Image (cartoon, rainbow, N blue to C red):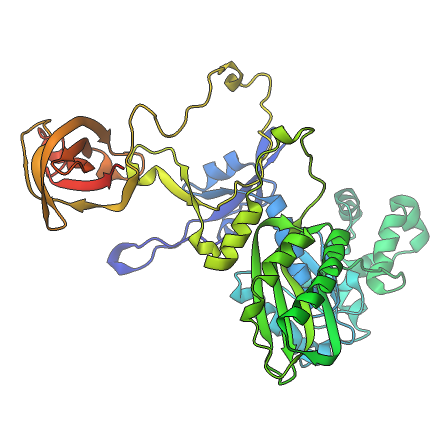
Length: 510
């Protein structure tokens, strides 16, 4: 992966540090991949990370993510199947097979299609090499050792000077061929086949025949998932809300059946009403969690029928599932008393009326600084994940204490916490640890009659260097009108480096 360049002297950007990714292999940490700069310095996949760190000081080492790489390659294969050709198959950890037979002319020919593929991948941060040949084996070899657009029938000549590793042979077979003095595919193809089969088995002969075209190598293509949609067309246009609601009741069971067959639950559904004048009407409903409850989905859509303008009539209704997540069997409690209330229908109803962005909940965050101790989260809790299993010899097995809540109940917090603390004016207070006697906030003067504090909160030095010495002293105060506020003074009142002694309003109690 690319690394950001650091500014050097004279305003010039310094060269990025060589980058590698590391992977655990047994008891050793080895290099999984290396950037061109690291390869130029002698680092290669399979080398121990400790050795590479000794050879190249200042090496940028990042953990490898094989699962993420495979998932990204599969997403790229699905994109290629939708965009370039219908037959696409992942090849190993870093390649794709594309059968462009009958599709290259749609992109201006093989050469232009290859250039467009490379340019598209480059815009998304990928470096790619493309080769076109008559067989998958020849295309694999040329893409990795001699990228080119091979003319029809010329793949044997193009393969001849390539090393035997281009045939996708096992390391043991490659080493044995090298000891025998056979280094290129041309030398291997010129040898008698019977001795090769006796010495190396049928795998080497099969790879050679696959590359040359004597043996077929069928591809197992990825199949892009088809979007789920149900459509109802009418012989006569409809224009009333009752008719639309009736046909939605007919469409919804079909949609639920399609979702159940796919093992999915809908998260986003579009209703498209095609008018006879060619101006479609669209409604979109979102769901807090995957569902295929037809009655609930129908209620959400029917409530918004008045938003559809039928015009001169509607000749087709369609329900499209724009987003869906896997939804399998769910356990249920044996008694009704043990079941937790299901808030998803209520949240779906509110979200489709006022918008999902207006719904959120507060969650606690482990932080001493008040404005960092609260974060917003989706209205529903995410599905519970199983806790990682701890090994028997892990020292964490000795910890029998209950986990602490991020919010300490001994220190109450205000009901309303301002997004940012607001500066107070005309504050009268005694140093070093007395609450204010009076202050002005938002143009109004307040005289304090009761106060409690201070509660000292120190800066989180591990986040920013500027917070290493910062101090806040918080006070709960009540004014003559009975309003209760949460104030703090920046600084401890004794050392100047802890703060400038300015006062701030941070919240209000109920």
